[in-house]
Image (cartoon, rainbow, N blue to C red; front, side):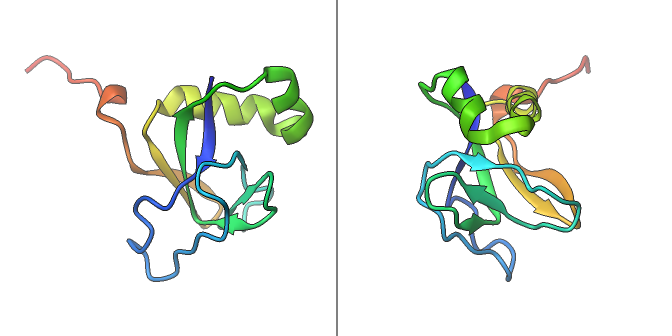
Length: 108
């Protein structure tokens, strides 16, 4: 299943980047419009970046861990595709780097 997990990839692209989570742990989306971090579900620590990863996780357990935002979490992961790195800035989620698999090329 495509989900969002903590990553250290692209850390340092911004001077205020930080990653206090465990690499690869599931993260929760920011809970308010001013948050600039994803929170690790296991460590309860923050990171400014996460990546869409395809991991073996039970959806029922994921729903129990993430709660009401699980549908949004899964929709973001599916929309952006495996390998896309996300950041938050000014309350907005945005891709920092996208997987080539998610990019489409129109007719030339």
